[in-house]
Image (cartoon, rainbow, N blue to C red; front, side):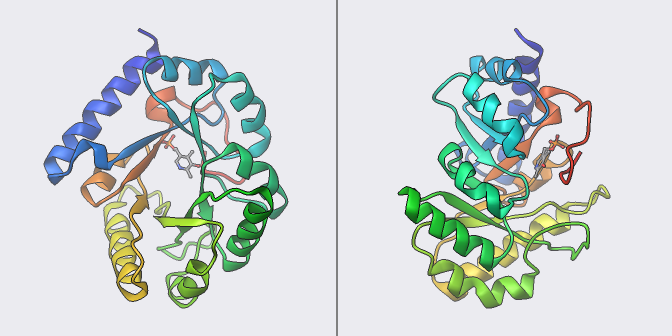
Length: 232
Ligand SMILES: *Cc1c(COP(=O)(O)O)cnc(C)c1O
């Protein structure tokens, strides 16, 4: 068994246990294996162990890696999105997790229409109002939700957040769930997904309602370098 396969099995056991504690079905949570900074060989190890959903945060890194990885895998773009990359991101990724403005959402919608695609989109929320992080301010999201939901060529799945890295993420996870429930209630649209939880806190995120957890280092090991503009 590869090291990646062993780590995956351990993460899987913890996800299953968190689901049991929360009274949730295991099938209600998807694991995104975040392979950023790791090579296609690591992706292949995870795929051989049954993992089919992967996350990347930089297009330049992801393009050759996806090409070199086993076919039939699903990829989510979890990093900050630059406008000039959208046209290349959409054909490679079924979902984008960090749409952080109406302008970017509208542009993504336009490019998706041109390409004949309908990507899944997550709206990133800067719940704690951190200056260093992207994401909608909650009040802005509330105001712009109707315009976002009017976009026809993106499927708005729900919300995503990256809480402050201070070891106390649970209140932010719970706040994101409350925000999702309120937005769904006021718009009358089901927003089924919450993308929240990383290696250090995915179990808490599941207990607070996450439907997608983005787990990198707990599966692939410690990253050797920091990705510019991204979380290390
Ligand atoms: C890198 C990254 C992750 C994974 O982080 P780990 O702590 O290694 O699990 C999750 N989400 C985003 C947005 C990331 O950039």
